[in-house]
Length: 260
Image 1 (cartoon, helix red, strand yellow):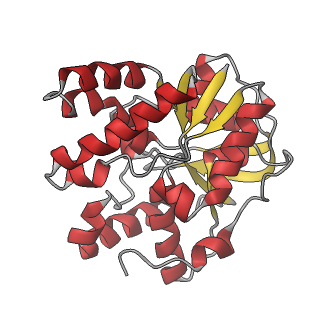
Image 2: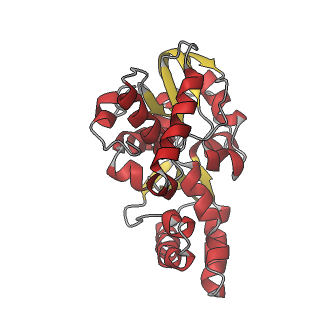
């Protein structure tokens, strides 16, 4: 199996530890990993802001890299960006040839937990001792149907006690450009989410999208709360060679505080 690892913008620019963990995890299961180093943004901010045509050149770029890589599939540590790639065929509809190539890409594009479970990898090599809460990211849950899989994978990590959050499926409030356009509402949604986590004695808050975690971490820092956050890949791969220790709170504390 040869996989093109598409790390996404936020992982590449803000949270490279997630990409390292995802790559190490795939290699642990015998997957040959090729980095999508020519890929940039998936185009979701354009599409969500009412400029879908601006997504087309970005889609064409990823399609071309996938074809050049001769990979069997594309794997992303993000439900949000995976969902966007699945929209490529429709977004490229004015160019039938590109739309067909985009459809071939979309059929072979998987979010990390989807890929692992699809290929029978149900017992993870990671080690993390503590009570872990799982946040259902909106795109992963509502567009890709990702719900039980990550929970099962986390339960397979030695030392993890999975805690079901009281409002696990509630939005974190980030929503891409939503957090920019409506920052006060975005912050209120994040605070509601974090308020529901209180009293559950969590050691770590985990999700499958760096955007959700970055937003929630900014609010935790602003509120003076010590709950660390980590991406699913980091926990599943914790302890593998080259994978940074979990959690990585200080790296996120240095980032801009999205909604204030």
